[in-house]
Image (cartoon, rainbow, N blue to C red; front, side):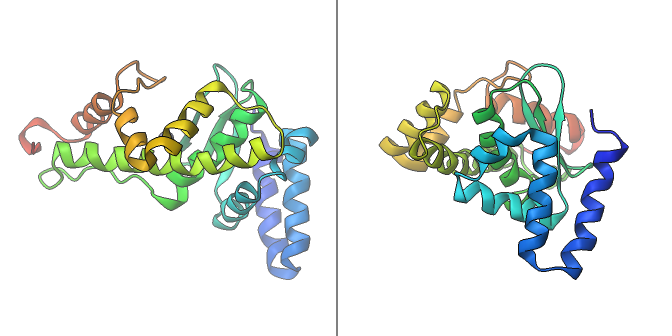
Length: 206
Ligand SMILES: [Zn+2]
């Protein structure tokens, strides 16, 4: 679990980043990663140039990555500016998920619907777009890992093949029928109930 020691590490990093060259601070962050995730995971990470780039941006933005116990899952907590990854997930899943959550954290951050302003369908579409973006990006990591000879889960290969066949459009179409692991709803339902949670009935727009 993230103890005091770990939460202090990124602050030390920031100080280093200002006074020493980027290469040195990168080495420091790699060392911290090894401590947190283990040597083998960092070695695998280094095989994906895209993910190395993502990690650099995550570090620069001060977004944290933490491992969590319990079932295998990954999510980004906006308030805590932290990416959470299941401790017991397979290594390839952990790496692919960091790239996925990186998009949610820094590339296409999710904004809550504004009551009386954001339409329900508009919100659902926007969330689907963001999720699509995250998946298209994670596919880049999948490609890198395959190139490096690292096995990836069949589910990842499915997304990759869909993308090869029909591009972004095919991803979005499949996503509309995908069931989320968190609630068992399909994605449009899930985003819809999120909207309903935030926007009171009198302020809802279709
Ligand atoms: Zn996502």
